[in-house]
Amino acid sequence: DIVMTQSPDSLAVSLGERATINCKSSQSVLHSSKNKNYLAWYQQKPGQPPKLLIYWASTRESGVPDRFSGSGSGTDFTLTISSLRAEDVAVYYCQQYYNTPRTFGQGTKLEIK
Amino acid sequence: QVQLQQSGPGLVKPSQTLSLTCAISGDSVSSNIVAWNWIRQSPSRGLEWLGRTYYRSKWNNDYAESVKGRITINPDTSKNQFSLQLTSVTPEDTAFYYCARTDDDRGGSFHYWGQGTLLTVSP
Image (cartoon, rainbow over all chains, first blue to last red):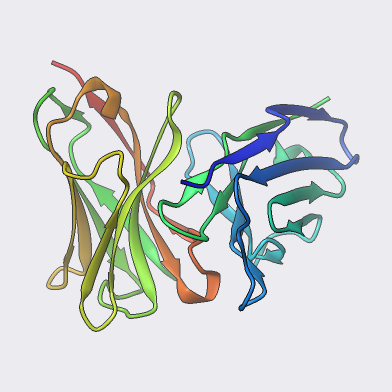
């Protein structure tokens, strides 16, 4: 199984500041012939299912604010929130879909400083 | 707009079988560009993908090794829904259970989710 490891486990950022969450996979999730990274990011708020933010490592889902961006390739990925808003308080997860079983990171809890 | 509506009991006794259903609106369980998944979430195991069913000229299933032998995911084309059965449950199966859809455009990322069902395994 591909193990997904996120860092940090928790993060406190001031409103309007940048938040950066990292995700590392135990093996590459880059499909070389398709030149795509099989990596997604989710946001989960209390009492709700996860919400898809980013897929193919950097493609923003429709309706997701452009302050959210994804980057990286191979085994190292980053989710960046360019200017934190109060409604961004949540737990964020990365997930690989390079193969089965699909696996998730352990989550990063984002709070306001 | 695709919507997934989960139903099923929230309490199951140890050694019994868990049964949950996910009703689909706005899409077809038989679509050949999507897959229908079950995922669970608990404090001890985090988010854990359990398995999927999908139609590509024939029905296919994939299951996580952690539950293989105990899990069955079945489509129901007459009701446009799919189900999860997990046999011989133990307290370690206590979790929130979600159904979710993937589609070819987004690869294996989970775009649509059910509302979640808290399942408790207790005598």
